[in-house]
Length: 281
Image (tube, rainbow, N blue to C red):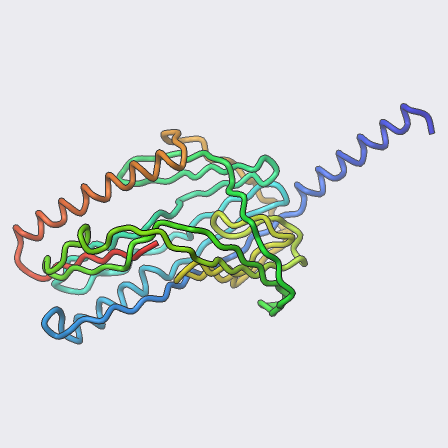
């Protein structure tokens, strides 16, 4: 085989591999669940009001996400749904960390773009994908029709304890100081779907991640459609103020402090029940 022929074969293999990567497509549906338990005594809230609040919070943290992917890129976003109604006679502000409106991941180029609308402003957060130091285990379990393998990694994160303020009886800024804490992230992935991807910012395993637990939150895959009849087009978001993740986090921290201050001022000017809840991490 002469040199020209060898070169042509190499080019054909590379083109073929690229076509396979682009042709292999899928859509995975994930449901989110969060564990929480807020206990209040009768001087803070009666039992009916407590039940209403807990039902509202459960609905708040039960969301559906879609991951549209091929072997190189993906789009992850929340499925649109109506906001849960607040209990009658109560004004509730829930402060949580982060979240993404549209998360684009480019596994091949090791980067992501998160288009996020926060406080009526559109941001385009662009940064490198985190290098997740997964530890693979031999433990398996079935999720739907797929055999999944366990993987874990540990990270130190800055967290706030879950806090609650009823009618201003606590100052969450004073009582929920951030602290460093080591948490273990547990994922279950399946090599039967050969993509290095998963929900949210999770990636880096030899198969699609179908379940991941990060602290008190779990994302569980409920449905996978591979190579759907209608071809999928995955486009990177382009609109929004371009910032790094670090700069965006600083902007959000400042905005949340301003929002909590406005909430307290409004609470002082109005009668009735007002509740502020902050979920840590």
